[in-house]
Amino acid sequence: MTDAPLSPNTVVAFIADIFLRRGADSYLGEEVTMSEHMLQGALLAQQAGANDKLIAAVLLHDIGHYTNEFPEDALDRGIDNHHDSAGAAVLEPYFPQTVVDCVRHHVAAKRYLCATDPDYFDRLSAASVHTLNLQGGPMTTDEVASFIKNSALEEIVQVRIWDDEGKVAGVATPQFDHFMPLLQRLVDQHCGV
Ligand SMILES: [Fe+2]
Image 1: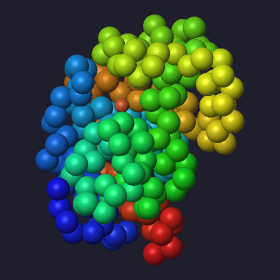
Image 2: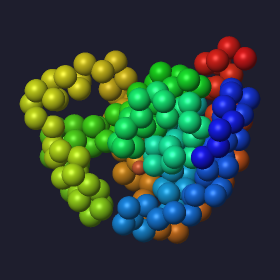
Image 3: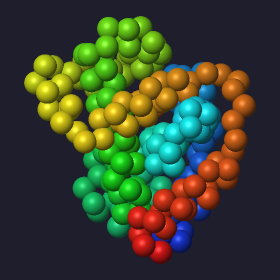
Image 4: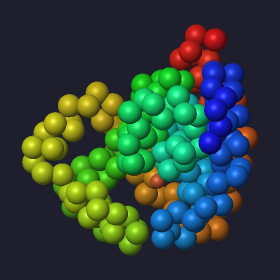
């Protein structure tokens, strides 16, 4: 962890450094590393013609696994051990709400899709089925009724689908630096730089 505060000018390079140093970490029993997983998702979004916010959301959705890398002031903003809410909290000062919502709800979206799409469960990886149980299993009817009120529901679900698809061993992707100008554009727009 560093004590240097982040700013709109440093946050993208800061995240790039996390990808560089920690990206080779294994991804919870999947056949891809953490960075391969996030870069594959971003590539799928880009190939689908998604806008910058959705590409950024899938690229950064698992950044919450690395919140111990963020400065202490980021940790003061109520971060807990859940990587979805932790990731949203560290991104929130710098990125548009849609990006933050997709990150915050990417685990909930899996629980939502398991409750509402009969084919979805069959597409989950074995590791994702295992974590589904730890995450509370499929949503209840009441949870679904509450979740569908989210104004970014469509984007949240789409990011989740790319998350699930970005777990294929051996896929060639651009490196993180390919996406840095896109991320900086979003930060500049959001922070009024
Ligand atoms: Fe993921």
